[in-house]
Length: 161
Image (cartoon, rainbow, N blue to C red; front, side, top):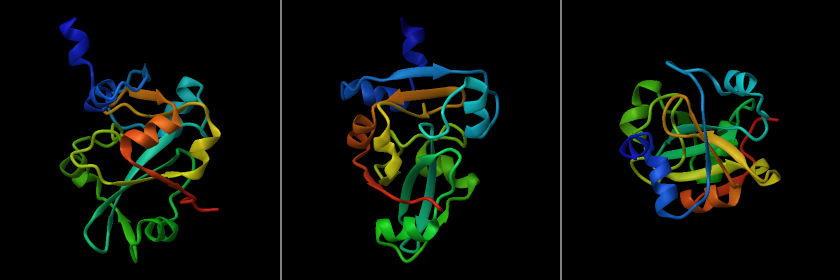
């Protein structure tokens, strides 16, 4: 029983505490692999698999964006959505200090602080979506409405056409 608890990530503990149902997928992974390769490896849809991106605005505030793995964040749309003049991707070396997670294991759930979070508008097209589970080799499968609620997120068109 204790071993099971040790395998829970902070994201899973937050979901459990909020009584939000989810499923966990695991796969072998010792280092960062991009979401497209993971989806190919696991036979998952690119559209319902979301990657988590962390940015810093001109104001020095941090923002979290989650978009389908095969799409690219539109920095101008992203900045406008959060009320910034501009946003820039957080350098990889800073991800752990800001979020508490590592590259490839960064999930919008349970970061060090509850940053303003935005999901791409297609999130509502699915009964379930896939996000990182909070560590390499782990995914969380969750209803979009539950994910939006637990991260206090907004939904907007934030990808490049």
